[in-house]
Image (cartoon, rainbow over all chains, first blue to last red; front, side):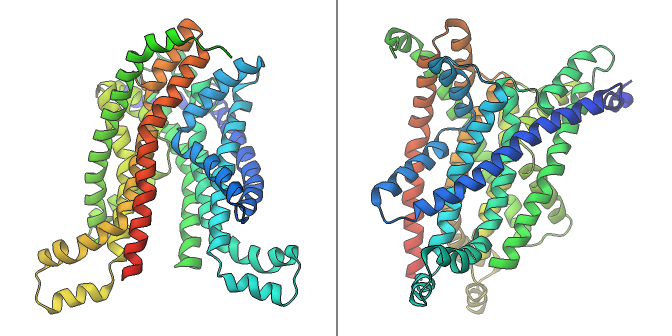
Amino acid sequence: MQSLGISVLFKGMNMQRLFEGLMVTVRIAFISIVVSSLLGIVLGVIWTSKSKWLRLVCRVYLEMFRIIPILVWLFVMYFGVTTALNIDISGELVSIIVFSLWGTAEMGDIVRGALESLPKHQIDSGKAIGLSPWGLYRYILIPQAVKRMLPAAINLATRMVKTTSLVVLIGVIDVTKVGQQIIERSRIEVPTASFWVYGFVFILYFIICYPLSSISKRLENKWNG
Amino acid sequence: MNLNWQFIIDSLPLYQEAAWITLKLGFWAILISSIIGFICSIILYFEVKGLKSIVKIYIELSRNTPLLIQLFFLYFGLTKLGITLSENTCAIIGLSFLGGSYMAEAFRSGLESVSRSQIESGLSIGLSKAQLVSYVVLPQAFSVSMPSVAANCIFLLKETSIVGAIAVVDLMNVTKDLIGMYYQTFESLLMLVAAYLIIILPLSMLLTWLERRVRYAEFGN
């Protein structure tokens, strides 16, 4: 019996259901990553402004997510904001909103760091040859900044994929929840189901995150090493 | 929004207790993962044969999987194979498994920042390998890796928020129970956010200060 525990993964529709759950996880991660990359670039550019006040606002925004755990934000959004505004939004939407807000803050910091790390004379030279502000970004700053920020940005994406595992705690039917349902259902027939199912989910996350983090590491060695 | 202050005062002891559990778990997790990380970084730095690939596999496994799944696997999965752990032990093991790899990277980057000339100079004045490590390499490596070690400590303390999922009575679990039992949503969430602010804000300020200090130290070179 024990040795056959792994068969629980292939019984009936189990494998298909697990992958459907995985799709929910991937969807949340993908939408959040796209949104936060776009908004993060905007935030990062705003962040490099000279206004002290504006910089402070950006900083506080980032620190809010650095200090309070993401799970707490999910709770605040899921239980608090919905009650306060008397609205009913799904756990999936809540998690996309929270991850996007967090990702935007982190991405903004990455973009800011990359832009500020560029030597000042690059900007001055650009201005000296008469580039418009847009041209300055398009031809001078962005191509150089991208090289400096891409490894960190991919790393952030890995972190966001890993963090999507938390959505099960606010009731989203993701891959973990499907796994739990399978374990519950086969409790009698396959007592070791939880070992195999959680092990499988563990490997699934690894398969998604490992390529991302190794690309990030390789790029970092190639460009900044 | 009217807050029920009486409720907040009444639930204060619950939060206090939960905050202690968070701190306790965090303390053990930080301690054990520092030890794991230190050992792993030494193995990577000296390229100990055989062990090196094990450490590398461990680091990749722990960095590329979410803590929640690690905890579920430990708590629910292993029980079925006859290994039963209490939820607190499980949380500490899970957190240390995760933190160990982060600490290893932090220490390793410190060790690698010590320049070749430092080691050669040490050898040329006749230091033994043990002296070289303890007087030349470690002190310099330590100051470089300090900010990332501090950042990892904050990271681990924040990650303790997840252990509520395996029935540890931490801040998240207390909050969830209070919301479920009394519908005092805002009060409970306010206490939750306040608790994390109290725990992590001072540490985060310390980290900022440390980073600045180390940057000055680098300029001094």
